[in-house]
Image (cartoon, rainbow, N blue to C red; front, side, top):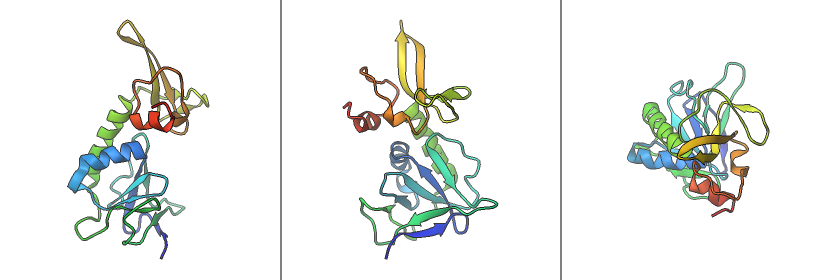
Length: 183
């Protein structure tokens, strides 16, 4: 058997979270989590009731659902695949662990978002690298001026892991610093 592409929006919708946010949310949910798929690149996918997460807007989180004129698919591994590095069930599918309560998942992901990236700034911000506005600004550096924040540098989700300066950042995760080889 191999990973099977199943359509989102038929039996469930899926909520995809980047590894840093997803790991923290999984820890916060504990036994409240339903089944979770982790793909070989690290993102985590929770299965939720169809339509229960359509209006969500969190940094590094995407909802996979049936769209009006196109289908969205999720790679679902066999139930027996419970270890990586390939795509596997991080929380195995079972009668006790199937769909995650969407409200509890949103709360855990929102808390993980705040813990990883800090407060969401007002309005769109420009990415330091591509200079394009992003609706998901991730703070990558904060300059301090006599105890006050003088300047915050933001990045879009694609460029945040690429940010590097000689001085350590103050508002990003240890995982990002380790990923960039600065730790």
